Image (cartoon, rainbow, N blue to C red; front, top):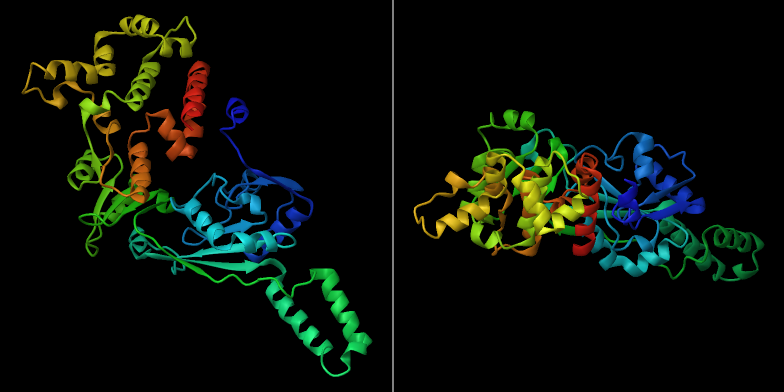
Length: 411
């Protein structure tokens, strides 16, 4: 991972936490019913998740209370706009964007001497089965400030009122209470220390609950896509819910996405894109057995690419170049079918979100398509970082360098 770290592609924009900030963070963990960390210094992302604490607790989703309840911790205004490195839901970063948009000024004030615990409540105490996700239509974002500063503010205001009553301004006991409160919490009188809950509508989304599930709504009919085959096999026994179920590996899934105008496929147009070139070169590297030149040089040089392509067996060459072969033959063979020439992997890999989709759905469908066929390294980094980091470690060094360069040029 050293090369990714050096390029700013792993753990980027994490905030260093130590000293009083670490104490406040532990205070929030306690409020959330979790054991404090023993670490004196660590890093956090935009939602307050720490890779070091996740490793310490041996739980990548330690901020969750079960799969149905997520939390966030804000201890610094610098978390605004930062990446969410281990999202449990596809909308986690959008939620933090909404929180900062609504309360940026208040967050800057509160985090001067406190922290904010955020609870993402979808009004479901716990999940019992995947179909519970169909009830997930509205999310309430509620806030709790460390040390109950709102309560302390009320107490301080009552002391001020008492101080201003009759001759109490000469009462030494009230003087001392006010001073003690001010020394401990500062002047709380003019600060906004209660943040009203935010209500957000949820339509289609992805969650890592039940081994990973996509819930697609707002289309012809509801669709649930399962990453876990075991969970899918249990779910298909259900006869109550009116919803279409797929495992992510089903061929019928991609045809349904096209028929429902969720995704589209144009092989002639796709063949001219940089995305296709990345996918083709990814497949090429997978088949490359012996290479006497640096891989980045081979992938960027048409001559070297052809040299090593021609050293492969005929069937492999046909698979790698099947898109070009189809488009060339189609000019004269009008009845030629894609399935007769094009590698099935390309047929899935070159799908893209339907042009009619709104941006919110567009991002989600890119994530789904990337999970169906994770062969575009750039999209894998953008839409499924967890899988990207795991897969990256299996790639040859030279290909790692080439992928890093592609990401940096497109970020």
